[in-house]
Image 1 (tube, one colour):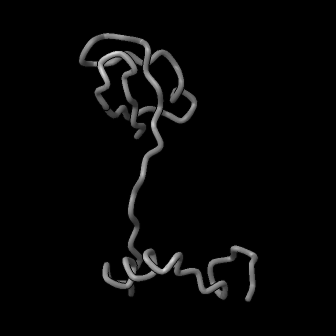
Image 2 (image 1 turned 120 degrees about the vertical axis):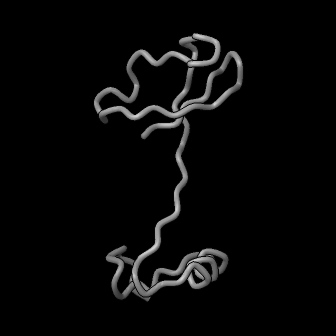
Length: 76
């Protein structure tokens, strides 16, 4: 799933495309312009054992990586 923004009519839309077609000829469904730009998609993920409150607390404190299990490589 990719998100796009039309640079002519300023509307946003989504397309379900294979990765190798993400930047191919995309047409705005609202104004039919080909002057579109792929947008950065933001998403949230939850894992078992974490409640949404603990995820929000970790995000607001600047992270939540304990560096003992995430594999980020920065050990404290």
